[in-house]
Image (cartoon, one colour):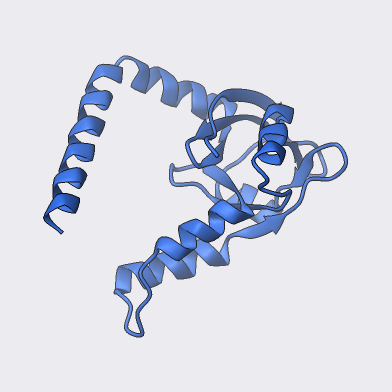
Length: 159
């Protein structure tokens, strides 16, 4: 499933965050079930939410070895120890663990953004700043992304 769009929300006093109804409906249509995983995001001061199936697929893509790469081992220990399975309640809200909010600087006013295979949770002010800083550089960011894709395709073709 492709996640896209920007949604302004609030985390309530009980640390519940409503998953946008459009996203919940699309997940139902895609047969992804209701279980989600919430973990620190790839951007500073963000959290990420994946449907359980996509979270499992991401985990399955990591190389497995009896003697893992030290960086991969550190990533797995840090990332998966901070990942929590959550399930929306009847109103479509998930409980955001207090510890994740504190450690990642997440406040009450947030923006949920679609990021291809997952959702990101940003503080509203952080999202607006990120968007403003990168909006003016959109053409340069797009060019760098295309170059990275081209390099990846060339590398894959050599393999």
